[in-house]
Length: 517
Image (cartoon, rainbow, N blue to C red):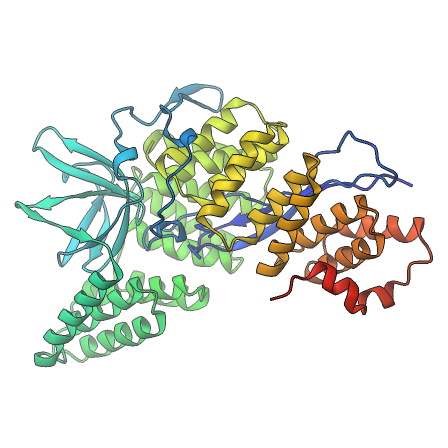
């Protein structure tokens, strides 16, 4: 009988903040890869544990990704070390400037408190604009730098991945984020609407605040009303109307309604809105709809419109990954994103993921993930991926530190418990492994990974009926889990007397696996 294998799967967070996340964002796609044959010998053949990790991350040009939530846990010490020099495709090197003050402000949330603020590709009003962010937009700070020419402090923000000024004409452009602050802005807008109920821009502003509160139904209703009111005006500025359709498309994108996203953003483009960020959003929708050529065309147009916008190159690389995960051209796009915008965290993490998936576990892969975490210390995808790389490199203590911190930040992230449970099993701590795997199952196993790992550990414990139950549950969730299918077949071959039907119907076996609520 051939030995059972442990395998790990990739959770491909793409284009959506609910990735993880962000990809909250984050949208997850599943892939399988066999790795990590254990060296120890047991009475039953060992099975390769599965480690969940987040692969390519595509970020749209606006709306905060899931990891923008405020956390009280401090990042681990490893994210506070000086940034390494990063090798770019083995040809050249770059690094995030050491003057970066990310450790002081990274992760802080703010709210735009002026009518509109413009994001730029560089910390200067003279550099290309990305797009305007309306009042009520929530942003997360990544970096801070002072423009020596005008002494203005600029912030690099995750919502849009560009630079905004902290002040305009001596007036602060933002206020600190809190739910109460957004509620106050909403109340202020309602007061204005009482005396100007048919003002479409106030209707839009109310809808946009709802959107940043993640109250999407109310946001869609208010922005749709703004469009109706605006179209009824005696004179209609087509570009202003186009922006309203674009914002409506953003809300649909947040709700993962990709056909309506594409429809509304197409309406904005037809009305004459020609901005790189707009094409980026439609490209994301097309990718999720499987319309790869339309997505590619939109990214090409976006890059033509704003070749200094680093996010676009990273997203194009992730599109190539969706088409063909082995396409080496994607790493060129990730590297180009880093060269253009060294503050963009996902250029580093996406490139590291490509190399890792290609079997490269050398130091520059860890360095890329560490740089991404220096810029976004709470990023779910980079943390789990770096943990997996440490695991594959047999650096168990470092892997455990990443998984521990990930669970501190995301206590309801099932894949993190499943990964840590698999790692504990690899380290020989089966008791801890079973606790984590039960927690993963309790939270909800959406990929079959937790049940698969649970089955591996139970198999090694000699609880073959329970292991068979877990492999079958993994296959119920994901019929394409070949690792679970092989392990199930191996068990039935070795123990032909196992009554599979009775085991699956047994309350005692289910009670062993499924925690009591």
